[in-house]
Image (cartoon, rainbow, N blue to C red):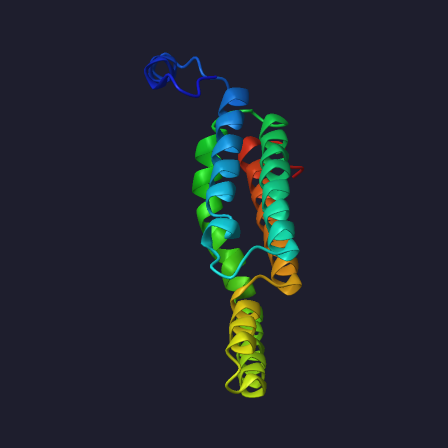
Length: 172
């Protein structure tokens, strides 16, 4: 596995010498890297709470566990083309999971807006209370973490099932 020497990796890819296990490690590192870079710590102007940390931990846990889960599903079959299968199947599955959760998100955003309006009305001209209300509104809540867990379970479960079908490991 190469983390810095891209030219050697290119040579191994051309020669077909990169194993499915190594591809798994690249996929894991990519997923974890995206989770870390997109972490709310880097995107929040209101601070970083324990709930933000929990959400980041959930993302990292599910990225690693979910990727290993789909690797094992693929390995139980023909053990070929893991990355291609993940990318190709993961795209429409991701859209489907998102579409399934849209109604929940709309209801959630609606009630968040009502809550923010009430808190801003209570704050009146008190700037500290207004900032606190916005921080709570724009921050991550326990409900967000639960929705994140639900979406990841749906995504990796569905992806694992479909990879099993493609790889031939699914029971027919």
